[in-house]
Picture 1: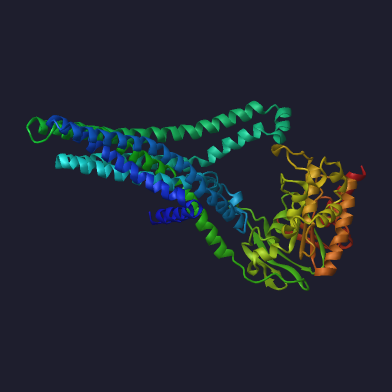
Picture 2: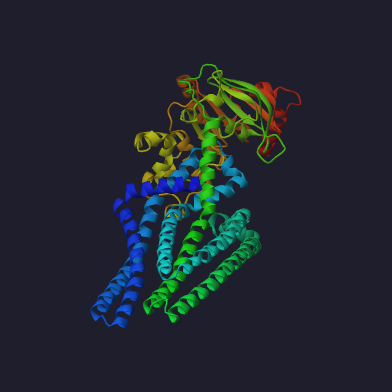
Length: 596
């Protein structure tokens, strides 16, 4: 509970900083509505008692007071809801960027690839509005609780026995809490299935996957699986909500019994001269309003409890991001240039949840200024090795050194600022073409000269010339822009990768997989020239991952991976000369296939 209070206090400070007048008005309106509810009950008692005693002036004044209090109550109830919506946005506006910042700031990629992490991320990322709402739901719950207390005090002036309505009023809260807990547990347990049905729905309704689905005639099967996943998730959640409704009904049944007994007691006292007619009217008014007030307390508290999944996911993400930052924190600056190079020392890595090693005892030294090619069949560990270099993962065993220093000890942000990379699973950034390229070197995002040069180095000038607004053309159909082919998107990614002038590590992970052979040849020629320039300037190492062996023959060092192990290394000439060597076999098979 202490964490919840600290979170709400933090959001309250945010609300005060962003909207001080609206925040103060919210608390003022809450106080006025409580006073108005009490004023109505007291005024009605005065009206009845004054009428019985024949004091007309007092009766009229009390009636006017009741009317004013009623008007205040009705008016400010609506104002309270308007302020609720306004402040919900004001407090939520800082939560969403904060959550995205935590997600993006985690050094590795585990939290984006493991289902157990994704289930927790889902609650924090998609339900951030619930976290903001929890504060104001709690404020309204406290307001309703205070109003409940005032109502009970008024009943106590009629008869102390009526104060026993308090435990009857509290029981629905406990019963409802039990039901909500069951719902929270079930929602967490079904998060993966719920995410699966949403993925299947999107798969069947998107243009990129629509072609395959229609050709295969798989639409009905995907719809069936989506419906089955939806049914499984909603069935379990429905059962949990039915149980929650049963708990809530039990709580209200207990309160209803106490309510009937209280009214019977007041009526008995008035009939035997131990109370006035006004007391009866006030008791009936307060008791009937008490039901609504208790319902508000239950509703507000239940709404706050309903945000528990999102809040717990928020706490988990915050703690996980902090723990990861502490665990992976490197403080050493990246070197200004490479003189010694990069070395793998008995590096092994296994993806979480699997038994097979993706990399198994890799040891190799890559001298500064080297163009190194990594080849091997699919699943041999090529991309995993590159991702370890970018610190997306950390070795389970062994270490990677840069200029003799452990890569794990380097400041991650500083190291990545000296990397340029075009990854096999490149991002399709649906922004303007210029921004999609310029994001490769954020400080030069709007440097058109730098962007133009990157476009030229990626052999994408012809693509820009065909766009309706040139570099200012918005890309991506979903946002109303121009859709690109797979190869054109890859050219954008490659241009983004060559924005930086002074990288120490230049990674090309299947950079031309979606391009035709002539385009591939032109691009690799340009990139090999760039790699040599970078080697002279900063001692940069260029890493090329490719399944087309014809593109790697000019590399200074070729690493051959098989089943996660480094089985051969050397130049093209050295490896080709190995009798029965793995590289020679693969190169011969591919050469024969292309010549045929």
